[in-house]
Image (cartoon, rainbow, N blue to C red; front, side, top):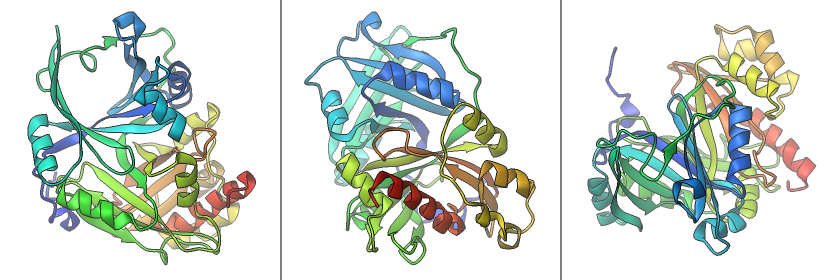
Length: 374
């Protein structure tokens, strides 16, 4: 296998030595019910737990896993906690994007000396299974990157958590790993955070989209994709652009009350099976009109999948110089039109579905119109 990095990664300074995404932690209003939803609808397995029964009195956390994807669903047990404040201000949302590193203290020192705001100084957590070192910095909004060093730990998740194997364990739907994590920031802030990831974390910009690329008759946005040196961590950053009506980014900023994680792109190696399972379990996706498929073959060329099957499941297709990808986006997971999930399968493509932007955003605009927020 050729391990040579694509040219777009050559400028990344990989001084952080990021090994991958360790976990995503969401602060929610009711962790038990939210965990049940992700288990039932998305096929995550409950692997660990922290709460009153484990001696943790201020919060409850469920650790869910599917292949290499790990979600932590947390809610507060205390009225005046920071977790509860975060929930009241933003609704259910992503608080921590934890990054797996070999040396958490070094990652913290390297980023804070380059200007990162500290969230948590290096801290060692221990139990009978060993020790984990964590340290954290703030990124856009109230989002945090927590560096997690777990080379000396053999437990289910982290010290303070106990392993769980509940009898209720719906089958996985084929989700494999986190492909990318998208952040929405306010007007004029995209380049600020592009600079942050470049200078503070050693990332490089691999793709840029302006309002000519991502626009419809009514709305527009701009986006730049930042990646670490080994290409395992990719963070697209969106900001609004001028349009006739309120864009999806403006809608997010309004209802989230600030910048934050817009969506998680979860990879599968069989998107038809995955989408079928998700639809059967009640997950709602953006509606793609049949007209999208009229000249799809002319636009993307020969692909392995049956076009009629893709049309039935409303799956989008796009091609770049490396191959093609298939993708589809859920509706917002919460009542607030904020966080959603992208399902993606890559057949060689390294891009992000530029050819689908117009169809995708028109679908989002139809949803915004129904909500009265366009």
